[in-house]
Structure formats: C-alpha cells, structure tokens
Image (cartoon, rainbow, N blue to C red; front, side):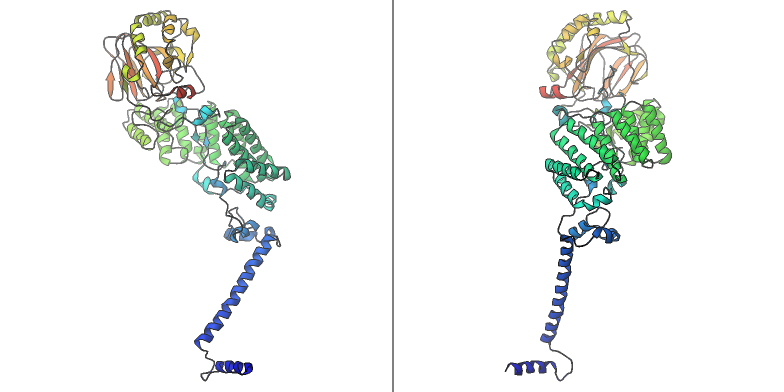
Length: 595
C-alpha cells in the first residue's frame, strides 16, 4: 500500500500538461529552496561567530583593507573588534573625540586682559583684572573656588571644528593586538566608573609598560579621578602620566598631540603657566603645521604677560592663515593693550565675526566696544548688544565679568537701599577729618598719590592713594591717615571687601575718564565728596548724570557703564569706599576670589 501511494504521488507530478506542477507543489519546492538558503546563512553566521569567538583567524593580517567600508568600531581600520561589533558581540564604542580629551574644544585658562574696566588703578595682584574672569553676564562663581581646587578664568583654545570632527588614531600596531583589553578599561571610564577604570588601566600599564594607549588611558583615568576627588595632587600625577605616554617609543602622532595638549591644559589649570608654555612649545616643534597649537602658544605667552612674544606668534599665524579668527581677536587685543586703538578694531571685529571656537568671549566684545567708543563710533553699543544677546553681559549698560547671579542690579543706590546707613553716617559726620588727613598727604608731596596707569583717561591728571586693597590693609598708608583708617576698622563690609578698594582720588582740571565698567557686580561704590568745585565736576552712570557734594555720599554700582568729567578751575578730591553687595551671603563674602 505504501508503494502504491508513492506511485500515485509520483504519477501526479507527471501531469498531462507536461512539466507544470500544481500550486501546492510549487510552494513545497520554494520552501525547500529557501530552507537550504537559511541553513547556509546560519552556518555562515555561526562560522563567523566561531572564528571570532575562538580566535581562529588572524584578522589583523588579512582584513585591514576593508577598513574604509566596515570600520564598525571607528578606529580607522577593520579588525577583530569590528567583527565583534558587526555580530553584536560588543557595543559600538563612543568615538574618543566625544569624550573628554585633549582634542576636544578645550578651555585654556586665561588671565591676561588689561584693566580698562576697573574704575581706578591699584597694586598689581594675580587676580586683579576684571577681564580675567569667565566671560559671560552674571556668570555663577565656580564651586571649585570654595572647594579648594585650583581654578583660573577660562578661555577657549583654538581647536577648530575640523580637529574635533576628525577622529584621532591612538593605537599603534601593538596596541591593536590588545585592543579588546584597552576597550574594556575605556568603557569603564566612559561609564563614569572612575576608580574601576583607573585600576584597569594601571593593570594594563603594568602588563604592557611600552603601550602608549594604555599609558594615555591611565592618564585620562587619573585626570577623571582628580576631578571627582577635587585633588590637585592627583591631577599633577595625571600631568606627568600624559608626558610619559607621549614620550613612549612608537606613540602615534595623534596620541602624542592629544597627550601633550591635555597636559598643557591641566598644567595651566594648576597655575603652572611656565610648564604649560614649555609643553606647548614642544607641541609646536613636533607639529609645526598645526595652526591651532601656535594659537594656544600665543595664549600661554599672554598668560605670562609676554605680549611681545604673543604678538610675534599671532603675526606668524596670520601670515600663514590670514582669516584665522582666533588669531585675529587675540592680535587685536594686543594692539589695543598697546593703545593702538584704531588698528585693533578690524582684528577684533573680524575675529568675532568669524564665529570660530575661542572667539565668542565676553572679553573680546568688551574690548571691541571700548575701542569703538574711544574712536567715537556709535556701533560700539551694537556690539555690546550682541554681547548681551550672546549671554556675556547682563545688559548693554552692565558689562562686568566677575559676577554672582541674581543680585539686585541698579545703577544708583540710596543708603537705605544698601543697608549700610551706619557707615554712610560715620563718613558724612567725619568728612572734615577725612579731608584734612587726605590734604596733609597731598600737600606733603610724599608721592603716595599714584597716577592712574590703566589707560582709562582720554586726557588729564588723576591720582589715587590706597588704604585697603582686596580686603588687605595697607599699613604704611594708614600710618599717614590714622584717624580715617580707625573710623573704617568697624565696618567689615568695606575693609573686608575682597573685590574692592578704599582710597582717595584726586582729579585735576581738564581730565576726562572714558566710559568704562567695573569688574564685578559683587560690590557697590561709595564716593564721599571732600573738595568739590562749585561747577564742572560730574559723573554719569548709565544715562543719569550727577554731581558730588562736599560731605555727602553718592552710591552707585560701578559694574554699570560710567564716565567722569573734571572741567572745573581747581582739583576735585573724593574718598572712595567699596562695600560688598548687600545681597551677598557671609559664605559668599568669605569664598569669593579677590579682585
């Protein structure tokens, strides 16, 4: 019976219409065909998995040519790790360019801009310049100040968009053979498992001491750990490890550049400016065609106050790359610091217009606007407005750079507004004593009144005699005016104001002080009139102009634009007392950095 049924089945295939098969028979043949294809495909896939899993093939020697098409893990070639990614055995890694390393848009910490927007001169101190703080309007003070980790005002480096997009090749031939181990440690780092990552890279360095990539990963992990623990000591360890990675034989050029660049950045962060300069000089020697490195070297010279060397470097950059916006804004700044106001304007303006990384900084908007104001160009306020829209200034009028957010902002204040009515009353009640002591110093020609030296004057003669600076008493000065200093000792809102001064100011006839802004919104400025001619002396703050009175206190916020004229027939003498902004807490007053 079984044979008979089989015969019938075979007979059905030989139908009267020749080779034609029925619909069900056609489906059966099709299923069989695709089943075999599926089996073959599965065999191929599992064979690939087996080869990868059990390391049955030397991928490094046979598939490098496929890198441009099948670079699944983004390291610039096709290797065993790419096969694992394609087969789903490992995750596709995040490109190193998107992690925190030296090829991203780093922030070098700049402390070089001049003191045009201070109201008056004072002794040279490390953080004296209002232009040094983080650019941005009413930028919050960094929490690292209170935590004790070294911090400097930040300025973007010149690393361009091209450098960020182009993925660095950090593996040499040997490192590619241990890539899976490196990736495992790197994956921990990118997931924020700092200590585990550091231990993993330390083990790799011990196992493979000549591996540049392992050493670089260790430096990055130390860097991350230093940031997490807020440890300068650990950060210094990372700085040294970056150098070790760059110095190893067969270190790929991209890894050398990344290591040394990050080293320079962290050296600057630690305040080791000369060390950072030396590292950048080495980078420029190794990679002379990299314009961004020369730009960063120029910044390093500016940080050390070596404008002459910085100027030479930026001239070299602009000769090779005439449209480099980063070089233009810095070269423009240098020209302005040399009082070449008109010459500085096109460089500052074109640099800002370029929109290149490192140019969108409040300090450059400030200096361009200031230069335009001094040449009588009303477009200054258009640039101030742009700076405001970009978030660098609180308003067109209020352009201070050292700021705490949320503080009450108004140009003119009353004693009641400040809450410092007792101090105001003491100053006004004792103004004759204060005046007489100031006159004794002035008449004695002792040289204690020093000329304003910050290029704030268009013309004239303006001198200052300082009693307190950045919250520190000038003991020798107070010996000349003991009664005045004794009066102030009871008022820590003034004597303890680390972002201000207490000083006498004398201004001769024919003096004009350019419009300018003070460095910070953290203080208010009191002016006590001592000798005020009957006419010709006035001060403008924003669009309101007032005159001093003898024995009376004027109070204004000097973070707003202000301007002074002395057109009288004799000198004007006032006493300046800076006080903390009344809305600052005691904790803020203690932890804010001096200016």
